[in-house]
Image 1 (cartoon, helix red, strand yellow):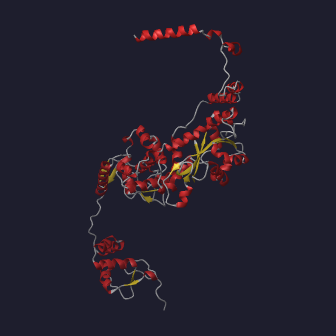
Image 2: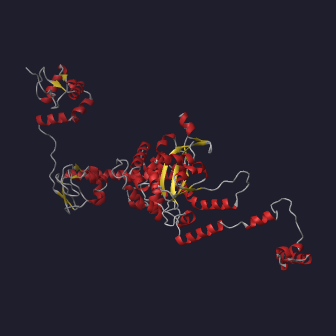
Image 3: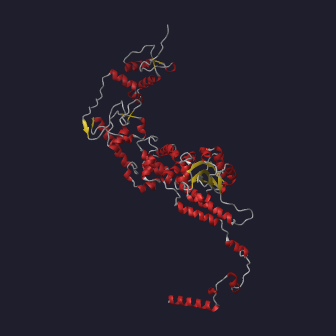
Length: 571
């Protein structure tokens, strides 16, 4: 005769596997009888969960009683075997002068789209909407999941009044009381737009109030809300951390939260902004070549270095910056991150900007043992961010002398690289042509130094960072550069006609002969022992005007008059 096909737990209806099947002991039979209202036989079994519930109940511990009271099985059994003693909910009889939405389960209360895949609007969201918009969403109302990710503001009520019961009013009063208590404990309140002015937003977080609201949209639905901090508070903590470089202890004091809460807040906001926000405002894929040429290239740069009459060359300025870190306990990483040039451990991100200071991309960070030439070779050979398809032949790179070992490689790729000149062996100073060429490069290359300075204005990146933050340095730099691109003014911008005339003038002067240098070399004025001659003999040679030649009597008379005037004034 075949045996049972299924083995169900005697208390709960859950099917049990062979490894999760336990016989009912004698000490548990009375508890099982009391819970289920039935007498178990020798062939009945218990699941592991029900066995532990019975075991805890037998011991009589408080923990077991709490488990019994919170167990859904126990509640279901007691509700069926015993009459309910709880007070029934009061009917909706109180009418409030607040608009409300629909309360049905078949369609979304916001966009009215029918199901399925609708979720119940959480209590905290309903209460927050009541505070911000004075609209009541009835308990149990459902909405689409995407509305909870930032589109909840599109709410449209269907009724001008709301009829609620005593339970809803009590919950609302308790929530308002808790909000008032939380506001009293908050020292720096960012939930109210009017609490800080626009200038105070810039001083604390580096961006204006409107920019703060726009940045807030990128983290909605990606940062978990807690009773201790709201979404605005989380973003404010992150911005104040990277803008002012305050410690977690100071931020926990200002916002009245724990240091662990500050740490989790910074981590979650960094992860949220590192996605869509960075991809839309930084990287070679966030901007096209035509946009860089038309909107982010100065006319003076095209005049000085542009060789294409069509003006379709992209001019980029590259340079590496330093992010200082603490000494690592890992000996291998310690050696690779130590810079012999600076004499301290650091990391080197590669900054690529346009001639107006717009951040095109940030690569890295790289270890300190890599120089600028090896970094740009790695970027081009690895084709990071598909740079070799974005950069075309005859494009122009403005670099410094640290890229000297990569000039041949860039020329092989068809890229025109311009760098300040070096002095030849045995020279004490640059030639006139080399000095003028270096001045033309410096006239355009200064913008990347200002861009590096703008990054360091966010004090967190200007400090010495702990080793625990090394994996996230690249994320912080990219977020800062994205904020600068989206919300701050460009570093360099001017009138196109004025810059074109200035560029033509610089090109003309750079090709002129240094007349003063020729005269010094021809007359040997650079020698220490010069051949001096009387002034009278030089009048006809150098065209010195006789009106400026004074005799000894005239010189003494002039000096005496000045001395007499001084004595009269002194008296």
